[in-house]
Image (cartoon, rainbow, N blue to C red; front, side, top):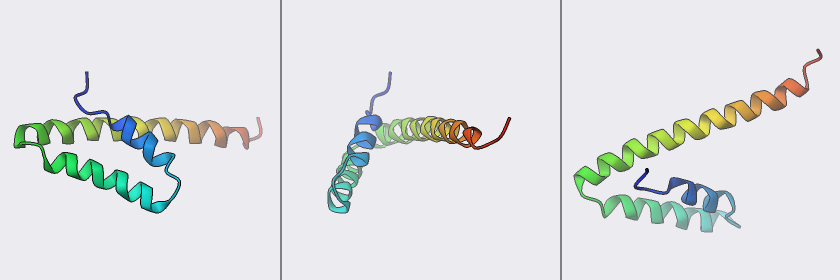
Length: 73
């Protein structure tokens, strides 16, 4: 189980009503990172990398599915 809930930050950022709100969410994440000890920063970075890899893969899959709709059979 993940120690950090990156999905919560991600969803909040996606649903932010403006750039200022998104910047505040990003700052909150940066402040969280700054408050961690070195061991926790390592876990944070590993979990963030895993989350981002998973999200990019999901987005790529969604994109390829949508692109496939434009390709004649």
